[in-house]
Length: 399
Image (cartoon, rainbow, N blue to C red; front, top):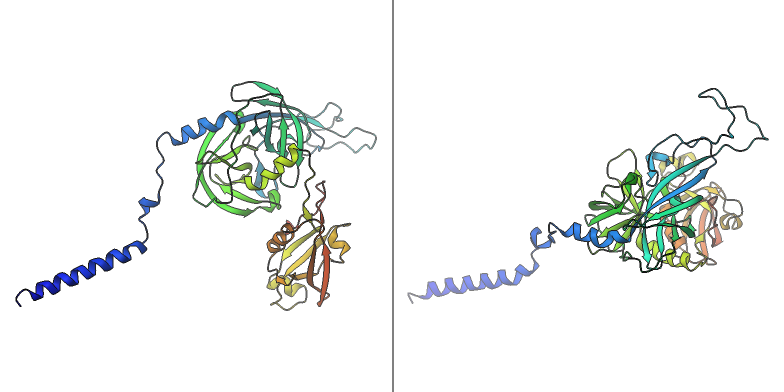
C-alpha cells in the first residue's frame, strides 16, 4: 500500500504525456520550420540560369504627337521602356517660332513629329527566336534591335501585338537559343521571393531581388483589363517586358509599369494570362475576348442620392456606353444601374468584369437594371473586344 501513491502519480503522468503527444500534432509549426533557407549563392545561381534567355531591346519610334516629350502614364505611373527623360528632337519640318510658344496652326502643313529611341527588355520563349515583351515597348517601331546576353545583335520583327494585355511577340532569325521556362502565377502569395532581370536605364542584364507585395491588383491608370502582380523587386525604366522569376526559375510575370512617385512599387502581368496569348500571337490566331462596351462606377450612398435613388440602392452605375457596342444594342443607357446578372448580385464593377470575362463571345447575359428608377430585364449578347484601343473597357472611369 505504501507504493500506491507513486503508482497513481506515475499513471497520471503517463496519461498526461499521452495526451500531450496526441494533441501536439495540432499545434502550429514554429516559424523557423516554415522558412526555406536561401543560401548565399541561391539568387546568383538562379540569375545565371535565367539571364541567357533575357534580351535587351532597342527601338526607334516615330512620334507624331507634338506635345509628348516623354512617355508618362496618368496618375503617376510610368512604363519601363523609356530609358531617359530627354526632350525629343523635333523634325526640321516643324515651323520655327518663339521659344515656349506654339506656332499658328496651318492645315496645309505636315504634322510635327520626332524620332525617339527607347530601350526595353524581353525574354526568349522558343529556341528559334521568339521573344516576349510588352506591346508598348515595340509598338510603332521603325526599327528593333535585339541584343542577346552573349552580345550578338539581331534585327527584330514584330510577329503579333495584343493591346488588351500589352503583350507582343518579336522574332529574330536565330536557332538553338536558350529559353526562359514559364512558371505559374496562380499560386503566388504575398511574401514569395522573386527576382527581376532586364535592362534598366540601358544597363543590360541587371538582376534585382524582392518579394511579391500583392496579387490581383487592379490599376486602371495602367491597364484596367489586367489584375496585376505587385512587387517590390527594384525595377526601373528599361525593365519593361522583362521577366519576373520565382525561386524555381520559372517566369511568373512580365514587368510592365511602376508607380513613379513611390519606391519599389511595380506591376507585372501574370504569366498565366500571357501563355495563351503568346501561342496565339506566334500562330497568328485571332484572340477573341468577351466585351460589352460600357464603363462603370460603383454605387455608394452619395452617388445614389445624387441620382435621386434611395441611399441603400445596391449595384453598379453605367457611366458610359460605347456607340455600336453590345451594351448599346441591348438598350443599356448611361445612368442605368445594374443590380443583377443571371440572378446574381453585382456589388461592384469588378464582379461584372469577372462575369463577362468568364463567358465566351456570343454568350448572353441576363441583366436586371434600374432604368429611370424602374426595374427592367435586359439581355446582353456578348461581343468581341475590338482590335483598336477606342473600345471602352469594362471598368470604372478615371475621374
